[in-house]
Structures are given as C-alpha cells and as structure tokens.
Amino acid sequence: MELPPAKRARVLWFLPTHGDGRYLASSVGGRAVDLSYLAQIAGAADRLGYYGVLLPTGRSCEDSWVIAAALVPLTRRLRFLVAFRPGLVPPSLAARMAATLDRISDGRLMINIVTGGDPVENAGDGLFLSHEARYAVTREFLDVWKALMAGELLRYQGAHIRIDDGCLMFPPVQRPHPPLYFGGSSDAGIAVAAELVDTYLTWGEPPGDVAEKLARVALEAARRGRRLSFGIRLHAIVRETEAEAWRAADELIRHVDAEAIDAAQTVFARMDSVGQQRMAALHGGRREKLEISPNLWAGVGLVRGGAGTALVGDAETVAKRMREYMMLGIDHFIMSGYPHLEEAYRFAELVLPRLDLDHAAGPPAGGRNLGPFGEMIANAVAPKAAREEISSARP
Image (cartoon, rainbow, N blue to C red; front, side, top):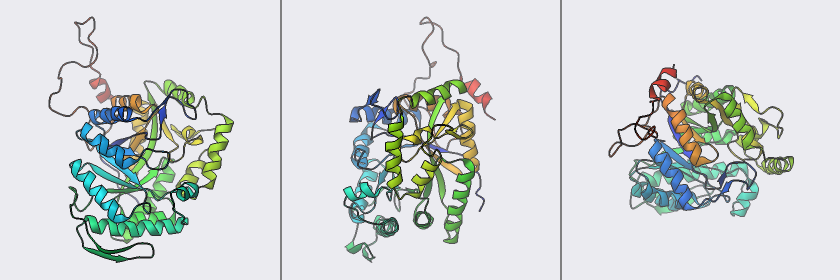
C-alpha cells in the first residue's frame, strides 16, 4: 500500500532522563539527569519551537510522569510525549494520571505506549508474560483506557483485565483522549497499532525498509477502516560541513571499546523485541561499516538500546534525508543528539528552518526582541543575517 507523502512535519526532541553526555559508553563528559538540567533542555525545546519532547520509560530512567508534571509549569507550548508500559499499573489509574496531566498542561499531553522487549527488566517490574501475552495485555489495556477517557461507565472482562463500574470523574482536555503513539515491528505489535493507536512509530532504518514496514501497517489499518499517521525516531549529528559531522560521529564513540559492545550485544540478544532485533542487525556489533544507508549511521546502536541510528551530515543533507522520509509518509520526527542541550540548539538553528513544519519554530510571539540576532560587532555593527542564505538553499 503506497502512502501519500507528508507535506509538513512535526519535529520533537528527546529528554534524556536516563543520562546524557558528550560520549557514548563512558562517564567522561557525563551529566546528571537532575531536574535543573532537564528543565534546561525542555526550556530550550520550548523556546526553539520543537513540537514536543519524548520522555522515555524503563528502570534506567527517571519516571516519565513525574518529570513531565514537574516541567509543565516551566514551559509554555511544549507538548510532552510520555512513555509508559501497560501492565504495570491498572488502566483506570493510568486514565486518571493521563487526564490529570492533560488538564494541568492545558492539553499538552501525548502518550507513547511501550509494550516492552526485555524479559529481565519486565521480571524486575513483576511482569512475567510472554511476548504475545504482553501485546494481548496492551490491547485490553487500551480498550479499557480509551473507553474510560471517553467518559464511559465501564464493565469489562478480558483474559487479563477485569473492570467493574469503572469511570473517570474528571475528563481530559483533549477529547476523546490525548493522542496515542506506539511502535512495534512484530505481527502482534502491528495488529495493535492498526486497531488502536493514532501514530505509528518506527526506529530509523534505511528508507526502503521503512517504506515496506509503513505500507504493511497502513494496509492493516485500512482493513479495519482506519488511517494512521507515521513517525520515526532518529538521532542527528549535524554540523556546518559534512566532514565536521562525520568527525563528530567518530568522536561520539571514541570511548566505545570491544568490551562495551559485547556487553550491549549480550543484553540485546536476550530481548524478544522484533524492533530491537532489527536495530541490532543493522550493524551486527561490528564497527567496519556503520553507514548503512546514505548519511544513516548505526554507531549509536553499538551500545544504546532502542533508537540506534543517526542522520549525519551538514544541515542541508540532513534536511534532505528527512524530506526523503517525509516522501514515504512520515510526518513526525523524534530527534536527539549528544549532549541533548547543545544539540537541541544546533539542530533547531541549522535544520528546522530548512523543513516545512506543521508548527511554529522559534520563540513564541509576544515579548520578542525584534532586533538583530547574534553578538554586535564592536558593540555597534549588526551581524549579517543568515535567513536569506538558508531560504535560498531549500529546493
């Protein structure tokens, strides 16, 4: 099934609640994930005009709900894509949490459903279910969650979840519920996505593989009378020149040694996530050829679980690669870069002006300094504007 190209994009940034730094697999240049630092990143994303931020979930992360609630009053228009795992809390409690956060943020909540692919981590959270059973729980969970968010008085009996006289007293701002995002590459995951979510997410695979996957998901959704939007999760290493970007990529993994790679691959091998298996297969734990598609680099995935690929290049090249994904039907991009604070600025300044966005980029209107941007030359002469140069570089 061929998808229509996306005309405009929504670009989100990543909030590194599991840690941040200048290098992968090293404490060198590492940063603590305290609230002050996370507030800096969220504040930058808010000011720079990102559509939202993704807050991950898992035992290596600070709790996504608590961090989002702490950052809501510190931001103005930023949306919060909060990840959580069905099966760890009852759907009725999750509905109250989501509705509350949606209200106190004035409708800025989005939900990322993570079914989970590490049996060891799941067991540590008290979840002892097979891959197929977890997706069955996710299906029942979303059935109940969506009904409660829509205001139904619910009686529900499933194989895993039972609810008697369930209800949500205080509704969310977004009706019938905040938008649902979800990623899953297995047959069970694609079936859940096609039936129950709003936006399907894929990790950054080569465009041909992404096109094949999206077509399959879109076809399954169409068979159920539904249409989804599509998003992709990527890192970015963007610099003024192509050569600088590739040097930065090499620098990012300068402390990644064979021991670190072996340890990461051992963890990946125990996971039953099809998406993680596809990510690991892109590099096979080897450093010989990490550019798996033009400007798509798998070096991050040598030691990082989940999203393991980055777009590497100068600003126009990275924007071009993103537009290629848009031609496949992708209209959501969840980006990140190390360190996340500095790279949020770099990506926003270099790449966002080159994309057709479905949201305003740059500082919000009101109280804006309309004078020249950049430092005054000798405190008297305005620096040259770069906007015309960026505009002329776009196709």
